[in-house]
Amino acid sequence: MFSGTEEELKQTKVTQPAIFLHSVILAKTLGDSIQPEMVAGHSLGEFSALVINKTLSFEDALVLVSKRALAMQKACEMNPSTMAAVLNLDDKIIETICAEITQNGDIVVAANYNCPGQLVISGTINGVNIACEKLKAAGAKRALVLPVGGAFHSPLMQPAAIELEAAIMATTFNQPICPVYQNVTANAVSNPEEIKKNLVAQLTAPVKWTQTVQQMIADGASSFTEIGPGKVLQGLVKKVNPAMEVASA
Figure 1 (cartoon, helix red, strand yellow):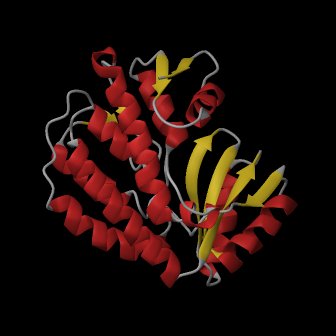
Figure 2 (tube, helix red, strand yellow):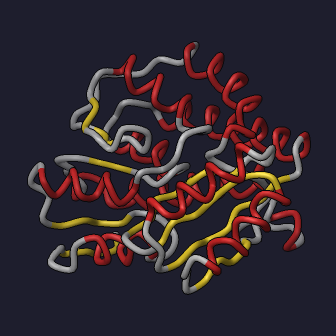
């Protein structure tokens, strides 16, 4: 149970450790019944995935998640910014429109490739608002600004990435028991040093969730178990490939 006002609980510095704790404690209660052949996590979820495959200890991961959340909160306060969900528009069209707006002085980038037909953009408030209008004019079913603290997975998070890099590089990363499919590359990674670099890059790079699920399936995955609050990732997996088995822990 987490206490506080709704506004306090919605702050990045609070939500990230809370979600991480929920996911890892749930995984711990399942004990040896969890024997993953591969793991992945969406954005923050990559840290709990790295606890599950034993790359990180719970304690070290919690420290990193806390530092990440505080650094991101600070970056949000330095540069007021936001994100928007875009539905039913080709990724290439979204990327092109974002690039045009960015060239004109406002930062807007593709941030979360969640599933086919659902992409989240991220950037300055003005840039995202302009993008939403242009994307709707280009045929998007919806382009909806999200109630988030800032422009996650965009260049506006660079100050947070610099802060987090020092903490990650000073932390022990063990050889994992199975590969992690990281957001930045969408590929299987087992080298601890490579995992570190990708975790730092993740703050300013897009979450390639669609591509990650596709690669896991190509590498032999036939069922996915979501460990954490809600069932969002199960829904996204089914949209990537309806034939996949999905379940909650």
